[in-house]
Image (cartoon, rainbow, N blue to C red):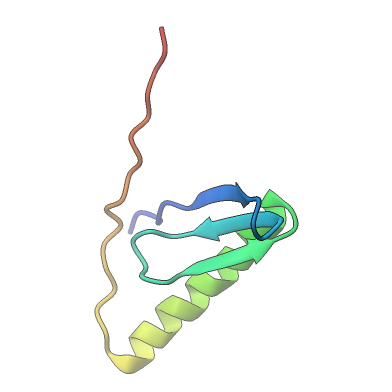
Length: 72
């Protein structure tokens, strides 16, 4: 299985970094640094996937891919 895309961005409102996985509904995490947010969202992803397996809910295939613009 391919891995899920993770978005990380700085939130002025929260004064820290938010990491989320668009393909997994409501799977996100916070960190004081981008690295910490990434670590926390990896833990959240593992918990999300485990909960889906236990509940017998479908796990989506990774689909989200951001548009990447190339500037010439």
